[in-house]
Amino acid sequence: MEILVSLLLVGIMSMGIVKSVSTALRTGKYSEFNYIAGSLATTKMEEFAAMHASTIDTSMAGTEENVTWPNFNGTFNRVTTIVVNSDGSRNITVNVSSNSTYAPTSVEFSTVFSDWN
Image 1 (cartoon, rainbow, N blue to C red):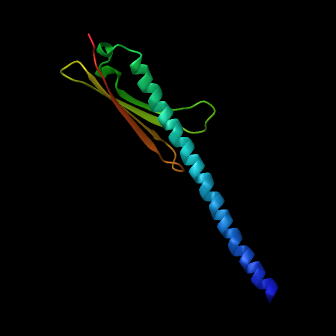
Image 2 (image 1 turned 120 degrees about the vertical axis):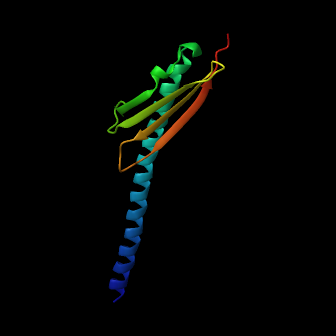
């Protein structure tokens, strides 16, 4: 009888450990997707930061589908919106979302570039 109770307790504890490991793996994968999405958004913003604000226009806005990251099995969609303001500044927003159903994530970066002439 004691052996059955011991086996039952070991089984219950094992289920808890398996659940914890599963949750840790899922959280790690989600963090990886989120980090890459942030990096893809930052990369796009840095492309605009390297340009003079007056050369940035709405024709540079758009959607890039199935954007990849080196050595990573997953794709992302990156949407860039650009608003040219009356004072010559540009509001730029980059939204990157994963195409994964396992680790759905989305990040959005916004900034304003001003013409300092």
